[in-house]
Length: 467
Image (cartoon, rainbow, N blue to C red; front, side, top):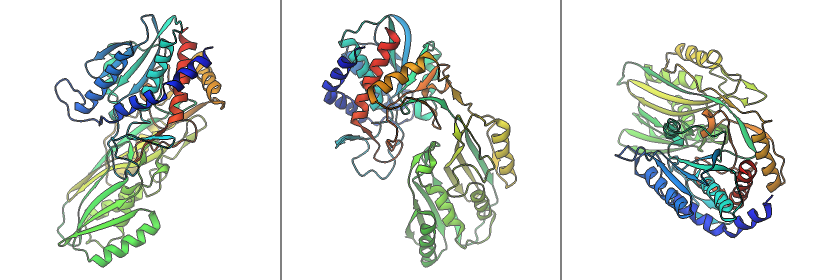
């Protein structure tokens, strides 16, 4: 019902929709320090302000929840469906070639820029779905609400604030994953660990290591400073390790010190195999250098034993596992800082339904303690699962099949979405199977036709669930 009208409406508003996405993507909305009235800094504040102004201009009833979250309501009927999207982004990172991160540009069939696929593009697609239903005067008996958050990438405290005020809708989907329907999300363990030791002045020595941007990003670059090495040894070892790891090692010299930059390939921590971890690549390089013996270098070697380069399943930590519903455990070593007297590191592990505190957390704790590290975690994030046979999920799958001609089915993902804590929430869109949007990486993009078909699907879902 209304498929032809919805399709014509969205197609006729293509250019306008792209420009609205670009309006939001020109704003650097990564999390910044708190300012009065701006809980996540000026970037997220201005993105929310812009998005709400946009929704208001299209005739929706908007509400601002203390600059944490904004909402747009289609009507004043009984609350039935929430569409949960976010306007914050991960940091720009390195390696952009198609455009600058916050200068969105259309090239061919793609829209490049930070946030185009995660999650500003899908958020606008949802807004245009609501526009289509509203401006086509399709009668509804219940309300749909677009919820626009600003802290999804850094813990979702925005949504915690929102749900301390408002109730969860009977049905919620988030266009922050992929099609068809993600009804299962893995649990997680962001393992934070430390170690301390006595400093040593013996040369050659490691001065420092600094690697990683965020816990949920596989590092594309990692940096170290060493002192007292011959340039030829550093260069020869770099060439040997590059052949072994695929990571490139850039060297810069300053007196008796050398600055080492390991360059790999960034990826989302939920899919670590898609990247090449510069952090673990750097550890491979450093452990091949002839440092003077000291506790610091001994501990680096032990750390690499626990999380070797290329081990994205937690095998060395003793936690590799999988199940039929949610797949295999994944692990990404994402943050590390080393100084002369100690280290602090964090890994991101996405854990299947079969994972428990006993077979993951306590195993990691023991294996790390055996090598002199202290794990500081006391709990794990539980997995999330919604019945794939529910009327809600089947309605989503039917709309997806109708507009794409592709088979609709439920899938599992490692990345946690906004709906992870919601009883009846699933991720739904906005990329089609097989599309790698380079989410969280350089040259993030959205396929324009996929945004258009997403808007059509979302509109159909609104009609089917709220009529």
